[in-house]
Amino acid sequence: MLHTHLPYSCLPEAVRSSGSSCKLVHVARNPKDTVVSMWHFYNKIFESETGPDVTMERAVEGFCGGVIPYGPFYKHEELCREPKEQVRRLASFLRKPFGLDEDNGDAEVEKVLWRSSLNRLKELEVNKSDEGLELAPIIPKSSFFRKGTVGGWKNYLTPQMAHRIDLLTEQKLQGTGLSLDDF
Image (cartoon, rainbow, N blue to C red; front, side):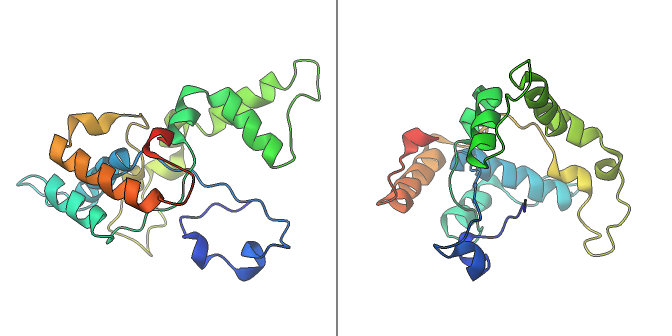
C-alpha cells in the first residue's frame, strides 16, 4: 500500500497502465474545506506575531488560480459520516474484506478506525516531536493536524468566495460524472 499526495499523472506508468493490478483510491474533501484547511496550515507554518501572513482572500486566489495542486475525488464527507461502512467498502475494494470471524469483522473495523483516527495520530510521539525534520525544518509536524471536521468553510469564506470556488469546481468536474453534490 502506498500513500501519496502526488497527482495521478505523476504516478509511475506501471501503476497507471490498464494492465496494472494496482488499485487506486483517492480521498478528496469539499474544495471549500480544502481551502480553509490549506489556509490554516500555511498560517501555522509561517506564524507571525502580527497575525496571519496569508489572508483568506490570498488563499482563495491561489486555490482558484491553480497555484495549489489538489487532486482527485472520493467523498471525504461520507468517510466522516459513515466511517465503518466506508472502511468496509475500501477493504472490499482492496480485496481484503472483513467478516471472516465470529463478530463479522467489527473488531477489526474498529481497530482500523482507531489506528487512523485524528485524535490518535495527533497523540503519536512521532507527530508531536519535531525530531527528524532536517529536510523540512520549518514545518512542525503538529501543523498537519487540526480538526478533521466537515463544513468548517462556512465559518471562514464569504458567500462570494464560496460561490467562486463552486463555479470553478463545477467547471473542473465537467465530463467526470461528478458534481458539487458529491461533496
